[in-house]
Length: 168
Image 1 (spheres, rainbow, N blue to C red):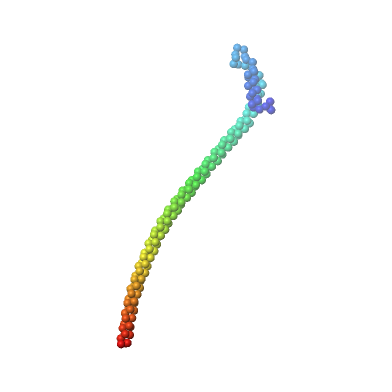
Image 2: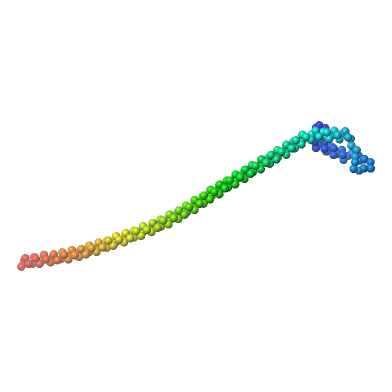
């Protein structure tokens, strides 16, 4: 019987009770061999603490494993949440930087347009003043030329009159 497992012993006890003869005038009561039953119960009692310890050890091990898995899962979730928060922060910083860059680019384009307009206006004004100065100079040159021509003609007349007077 030492080779039998606890389950085998309990099954044998169950079979013995089921196969036992009923007592006369009582269907619920039966006659069993006391020594045989007591030996089987002693064997169950001797094996019970070992198997109970083994069962408890298995249950404790399972509970430890579940606790460890739970802690690991919580750690993973916590790390994932921290990483998500970092990514959100990085994304937020990226979006802010991108918006700032776009704003700076727009301001730069506006400033370039203003500078282009101002330089065009300055250039147009400088060219207009240059044109006016050239026109004034041209007018002065024309006037001087006319005066020079008139003076030259007047000197020619004087010279021709003087020559004519000298010949007479």
